[in-house]
Length: 206
Image (cartoon, rainbow, N blue to C red):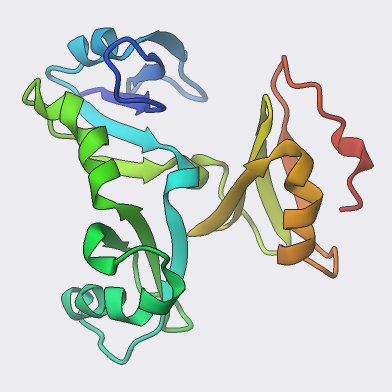
């Protein structure tokens, strides 16, 4: 079985410091994460499956409900169904559709086409094709009803609120974002705080 090269892409510049891990089938719990310039990381990719984690702040996660049941028709309708929510011209955006949900809605990820082309450019230059581009928001632990998961990093927090949604914000704005998304404060928030993050989350009223 081929290993999977996971790349957390923060910049498409060849010398950009990039987190990556080569995940084999023999690891039971976790994988060793390393850092190297992007050009070095991509030199390891040949012969492996590639999954790229892209900045969650650049991908809008939303939902639509349309009468169509065929995925192709739902995807075709998505730009028009979401047009009023977007500041940009929908013709400049890429829409990716998730599976139909029990409430008949469809999760949708939206990103600027130009930005996606920037992400893909260094891979294409080497003849590499990723299996998937995944918003890093959806790489946090899957949530259960009434519980959200979050990752704190220096100056920034990413929150996953359910299987296909979440948000990111600067650390000091987290109470404001929580107030907007969970005004009743009924949600249990599980925050992963790595070394080097000095924010005091014990003061949150959630």
